[in-house]
Length: 439
Image 1 (cartoon, helix red, strand yellow):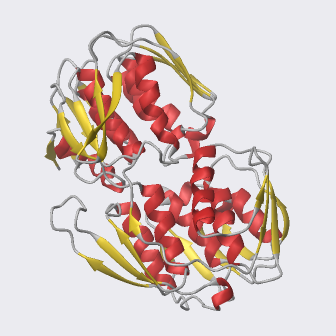
Image 2 (tube, helix red, strand yellow):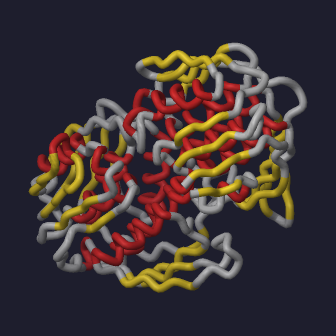
Image 3 (tube, helix red, strand yellow):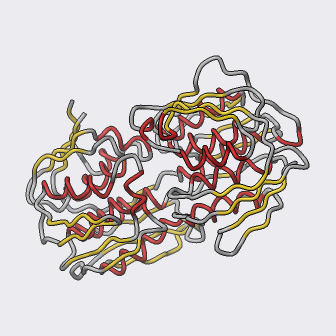
């Protein structure tokens, strides 16, 4: 499927979808916990549906209250947990592999949790996901006593089988998902076990802060180095019900915020919590560095982020190590900023759904933008206007959305191949930009 974006000023009030990272963590913890959890206003997207299906396959009973408005405003998931850990619950026996679709977060977090069981459980996914290696995580699980088998280079299909024996492991984390997986699973290991994790490399630290905030809310005991370079987690815990609403996704909010800043249209973004642990809220500070204006105001008792711009966009250098998911949208901002922008220290953007450094260089080049691809990032020379043409989203939701936003300021319409990939995290994004779909 393709979409055509005609250049125009983007403005309006937008309800931001719920956070994918929060939605998946809450869902998995509720599914493995005790009692009944009610998750309100979760992200209803392909990735979260993959996690929902995974939890059901493991044996959790999940009831849905349907949407009433098409924006997840009426959506609730009622989750009857399995009672893993000290509560003595078990997983449902698996006759076939669990398909997690395109969701890498679901894959890595769920397979570590599944390693708590005594029966083998296999995970697989779509073609793109089956190219994503989990080798460091699989090596760590093996060291903890888990039986592990996988395709070459630690790719799915992956089978894990407990019991979890605990011990000391060294886990290098080019993606934070590996560490979050062990942090969520370790507390549910048998009473008397202890998991100690040395972390010589850790990218995306804000996601670890998010995971730890959930352990803190659950009262789970653990020890951690201030720099997250070491953890010690005793087993024997259980997770209690996870209730309440899911806050908006700063990663998704970056795209309409960028659209407003590029086209000098004022946008009001609803559903975001400025105190949230999400690392990608740093995008608002980056927008200000580029020359846009961001302010928070109260409306009906809730926070609203307002983005606008009057002056020119200015190039700058940015370290994206903690926020690699911002690389595609930051590349678009840089494409319209006066001068040369360096997006650096983000080599792990190459191991996402696509090699986002190479893909953004390639696709922006089709729109007339000069880029210099580096091992750990991109240098981009901005233009006043991009040219129109045809680009490819490479099946990557963030690349698709970034290119769609880039098209808003182009000289001519831009045709984007594979726009359906945006539904992974932002259903309805093409319609939000007034794009025309085609097949």
